[in-house]
Amino acid sequence: MKAKSSAIRHLRSTKAPWISILRAADWPAVRNVLSTYGDVRIFEVEGRNCQTKSALLSEFAGRLTFPDYFGRNWDAFDECIQDLEWVAASGYLVVIANADRLLEKDKDNYDVFLDSMRTAAKEWARRQTGESHGIPFHVILLVPDGDMVASKWKVPPLASIT
Image 1 (cartoon, rainbow, N blue to C red):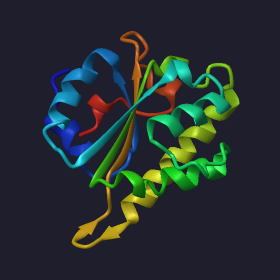
Image 2 (cartoon, rainbow, N blue to C red; image 1 turned 90 degrees about the vertical axis):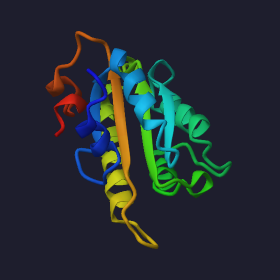
Image 3 (tube, rainbow, N blue to C red; image 1 turned 45 degrees about the vertical axis):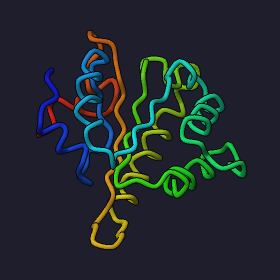
Image 4 (cartoon, rainbow, N blue to C red; image 1 turned 180 degrees about the horizontal axis):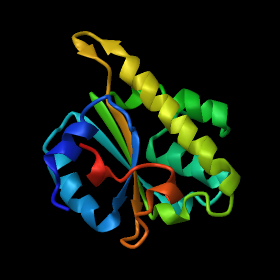
């Protein structure tokens, strides 16, 4: 996939779907285009370090530099992911490499994680700052080439977003 302009436009918008899958091999092209927009903050999270809820919370806390008061539970995660004042930007993108490993030892928390990220994105989309009506917040799950079955991931492929 070339970095489709429609996919890039989507990632710079506040429109749902806020979580999508992308072939891992396609991420460098998308990242290169997005890097030309200096106002978008990209956080790269390693899915191999997120196999359990506890590990996921720790990985996000480190990669997104959560404050020291972060309580390492879903409520505290939601509070931090919806704040991010310590890394102010006009848009946020969380990219999870090796998403096939994401919560693989704690599958009951996968839907909780998706709900948390969707709620955060919805809250960011509603936020009004000066002239801006909403701040883009998206999540991309990078998956192996042969694993692009949207129903498995419960989110659509980024390439299909128009």
